[in-house]
Length: 320
Image (cartoon, rainbow, N blue to C red; front, side, top):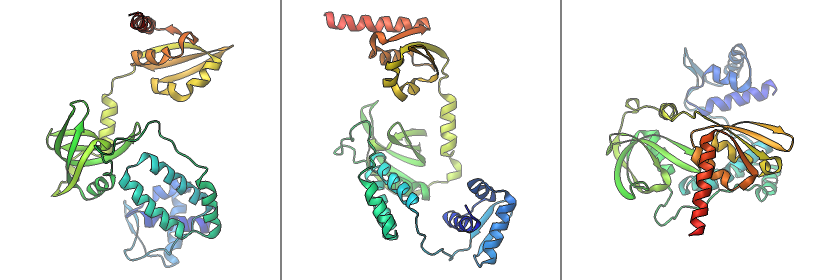
């Protein structure tokens, strides 16, 4: 990237956040801090009102805006791909808002970029691994409201259905973050009913409203702290498993094995030896059942015993 393009990109980065640290600019453009200081000074000399706070970072003085920015074909293609992902992995409210944003983006594209997007549109597909949630019971349209609540530290009131308890309860909660995992969006919040942090599946919220009550963000842990605590409290995967599969059969297993803790694989002639570190021996055994005698358990004995139990259970089921 030449210096003119980098200066423009730095200016866009500064407009995208309230405060931008010099280290962030350095990391993004792979330049030294000394170069960052020179580039910011060059922008200031060109008339851009950039302020600086010692130990904090740079900021654009309120009221200054860069004229509309044109997108490259590659950037437009990346936005289109993002839109395809939004269609499948977001809720109704976010899809609607992203659709409005894409219309605005398309309106400022040059003719060649618009043609490029149209040629890509029908040739990029994102598929989900399962069908949609029943919309009658779970409207799945609350992400935008949750984002609003997060941004303003606003308490939410919701009717939430727990599949474990098989009952719907009314909750007041203080949102600390949302994240996507396992094909679902999750709301992490301090539940005033349970007096503790809870993980709510967003697609199980039946009703939601923003209250006029606000909470202090500094009294709650951050989303990153919550997730780190959850990771550290998860059971350690201590059981080493080794299996042998036919080389042709391994191709059909693909990346599914990583869900069971695949660590290593070694090809030996026509066989592939797979090594796992897992605590879910029973789940792994049920998965391996579908491959029949194409799989041989090498160790541990616990998995061999599990496989025998599963085979006996299946035999007894069909002999009744």
